[in-house]
Amino acid sequence: MTAKPRSKAEEVSALLSTLGIGPLTLRLPPDWQLTNKKLLELCSLNETVPFEVDETGALILNMPSGPTSEWMMIEIAWQLRSWMDVDAGDLVFGSSALFELPDGNRRSPDIAWASGQRLAEFDVFDGDVWRLAPDFIVEIRSMSDKIEDQQAKMDMWLRNGVQLGWLVDPFDQQIRVCRPGAEPVLLERPTEMADDEVLPGLVVDLKRIWRRP
Image (cartoon, rainbow, N blue to C red; front, side, top):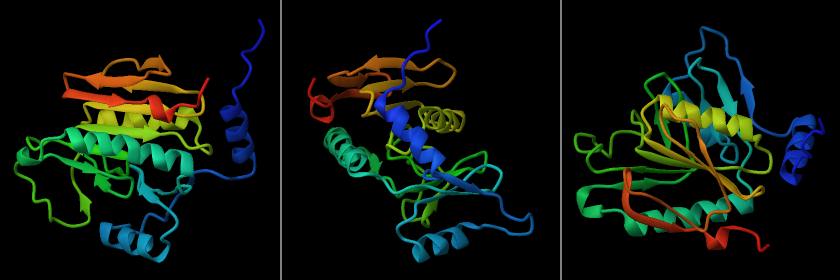
């Protein structure tokens, strides 16, 4: 059986991985307590490196977003911000927001939205790392990301209370729609996205984010 040829994104991702370019996980000694305060101090001292922490307490050093992923984040987040109900207390977040999740992960999605209902009893001025799982998140693949790693991160979000996730692959021009307890649904080059269950009334126009055929 002939193997499926790798896409250009997969070839570049494999090359970057061979060169040691990509997310790096550092295991810390057990007596090193990486508190939120220490994590934020570390972030402030290394402003160009996005840090996260997994459920074991290991430190994750991510690559900075590339220009392709970054402008896509802004494009989708702007449409999300224009749709949401600010009077109800909804909030949208960018890629630097750290969330502390029930299983101990401290992670930053590329885009997140939390409904006013979920935030009703939450102090939005309570520190720089929120103990909160957003309702909806978007992860956008960078050239250095393996799609398998991105899917594993998406599964982590869903296990911790996120209700809907979109995994955007701008290089293979696909979106995976992810929900708790269900297999991802793969969409090829969709021109718009909607979800009346979690995001009633929102229609995200995606025509600008794809390469021309």
